Structure formats: structure tokens, C-alpha cells
Image 1 (tube, rainbow, N blue to C red):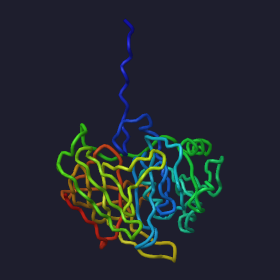
Image 2: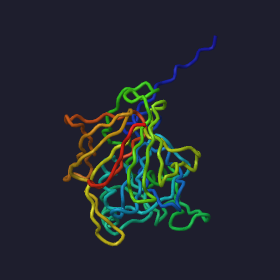
Image 3: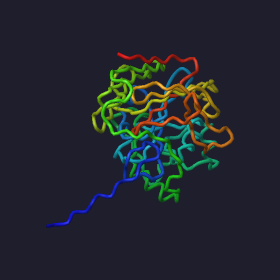
Image 4: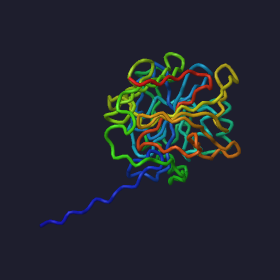
Length: 309
């Protein structure tokens, strides 16, 4: 009889709560376009966490996609950084990957506030452009390429992020709501977002501009297990740049497991590296379902609709 080895259980990512080989690897945060011409994006279904918000008040949105567990062979289209992305990325202890940035963001990054990889200098040829997509929406990279840059730059490779708490869920149907639900986030068209909750998979299918959000690599629709509506004021600084109050505190609503949990968010203004917390109405930190988290930053007055079908 041939002896068989018992698989060693994998540790869990502190971000997604899913078991994976790279559970303690420092996250890589990539700034992604959301313009129609850039769709469908590559690698977006493999992220652990996403933070989406307008980069022009009431207008264009962008997403910072955090990768820890998975290694998509192509990620893009990559766009420029904004200064609001910096404390959010630092709070997850990630390396920020971007294609240039606003002068507000570059002033901070050039002073060494955090580890970052800028495609404008294309270190170690980690980035490429596709001729079939119009510039500036045609910039791409891969996790393996960025890992090589991180090593060459001698950036820390092990994560110090304390993580988010997660519920122990065995899978299957949602534990709270045994029927479908729809969440509409009324960003300006064509950046408006919709999530459709499926109790059979206990997940939320993502739509953008009234079309399914498809990952170009897999051809599959993007799914999330947790949606966070984070309300924060913004103001226009210049024609192309705004300022969003991502540090401090405000109202929040978490959608997970087919339920709606009202509460608050907090991030220490005095420490850019502080974690972004989410609390329920009793002041307890909200536990997420293991799986991808999408944080949607919206204005306090902006309309968000949740209904059960």
C-alpha cells in the first residue's frame, strides 16, 4: 500500500478570509480605469479587495484593486493615481501600482511616503501597452512582473496588515435572505454600478453601465461576497482633480450574506497607515463573508437603492 501525504491546510488571507498560498504576501494595489473604452478590464475577478470612488466629483470613477491570493497574468487598463488613494492603500499595507498621477499624488509619492511602482518610468519593463486599445487606456502589467520590481527595489514583501474579521461560513445559500436582491449605486452614467444578490451562491454579481462587469481574462462576470457603501464628502480642487474625505469617519452600510447592516466607518486622520474600520450600530467591527470585498465610496447625499425581489 502506497502511503499518501495529508495536504497541509493553507492559511487564510487577512483581507479576503480565503485560504491561499500567498496569505502573508504584501498586497499589490493597482489603479484601474473605468472608462467605457477600457472595458472589459483584465484580472478584475481575481482581486481580494476593491475600493471604487469618483476622481471627479459627480463624474468619472476609478478603482484601486488589491491582489494578494491570486496572480493574474494581465491586469489593466492601468491609470494614474490620486492623492486620496494613498492613505487607503497604506491602510492595507499595499504597494501602489499606477501610471503617473495627479501632481498632488506625485508630490506625496516622490517624497517617499509609501512604496509604489510607477509605469511612467517602466522599471524592469514591467508594463506594456496594447496597440489595439486607444491610449491612455492601453496600459497593462502582471502580478509576476510587479513582484520582480518589488524585489529589485528591496521593498518589504511580507504583509503587516492586521486584516478584517470574517464569519465562519460553510458556503451554500445566504444565511439571512433566501431571495434575490438588487443594489443600485447611482454614480453618473456610464459609471453607475449594480449588484445582483444570488442566495444560491451567496454572492453579488456586478454590473457597470447597465452591462455585466466581465473579466477579459476569464470571460466570467465579476462577483463579490461583500459590498460596503462608504459615505464621504468630496470637493473639486481643479478641473481634473477632486479631494475625498477618506480619513475621519462617516456613515456606512455593509451588504453581505443577503443582509443590510447599517453602521459607520473610521480611519485615523493622524496616521495614513491606519486601517479603515467598519462598525455596526452597536460599535462592533463588522465581520465579512470570506471572499472579495468591494468598497464603494459615495457622497453623503448620493442615492443608493437596495431592494429585495
